[in-house]
Picture 1 (tube, helix red, strand yellow):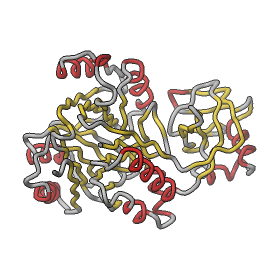
Picture 2: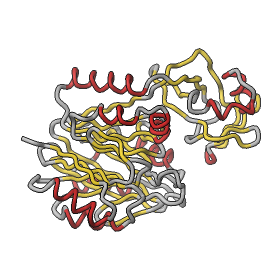
Picture 3: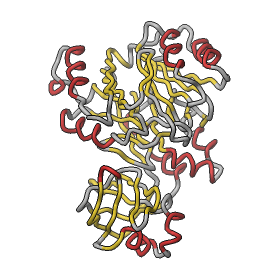
Picture 4: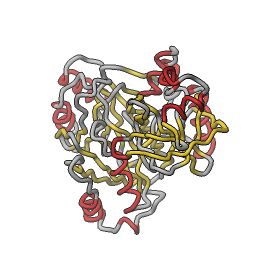
Length: 368
């Protein structure tokens, strides 16, 4: 029995793309449909996708590139349809006006009313959450901090993109389009799930302490008591003028249980470094060095198959910086092929969500 099925379309218009996907999924009893759409398609894609799958819960967001079973794509819509054998129940809530104030509690109350149980009583092995956030809101840390404070249920996801235009990113739910918003979906997964967090870096023996930071601006002004640009330059052994060339190859990581949670530098601003994620003042980080995305991802996928058996589906939240590296090195096709045997939908994100806000990482919800 097919419990999950992926589909994609590179047709040019919203109507053509939605009809193409609906045709590919015809006959499949879809309980939930998650889709990721290039910003080439206007926000009517949300309404048309919901209309095409009127009996399903439909949600998604805009992208900086798309992933489907066997391929990495551009200017496409990708979708993963899940049957009731995978998702027996789910509820979607939208948290709006993130720039004014982040408050996920009404969404959590909505979940408890729908499932008729407090979140604290839900089986952590059977309930999982997806979080999609406006990638230009700058609110990811606040959203994830609140989720972590309120529940032990695992939420994984990504920040919506817009093909590096940095103009407008959207999340989609119930036929509507939202900006300055986060979408939370809580799912009851009868067969269970697993989480993959993979980043292709080795940890170097160089520790740095952030001694002055502006978290709201994701700015690190001082490291080890020195101007941040100078301290980072010393760590990578290059002149300050050259350090932007090393940001992708040598980000830093907050270490948790010997695992790095990556924070990527974005740009120099005077003697400060602006990051894609915030780093709290007083935090120690380790300098990282990039390794091999294809090899590392292949190994972690194989390990999950060996441990958990056959995989029903994968939702892949994949950092756009990883996509840029794969495209630069001619490996995008090889990366897509890693998922050829499994129903998969994913997208290139403006940051990944899993126990906080991350960079240069893939966070994946693996459906068993």
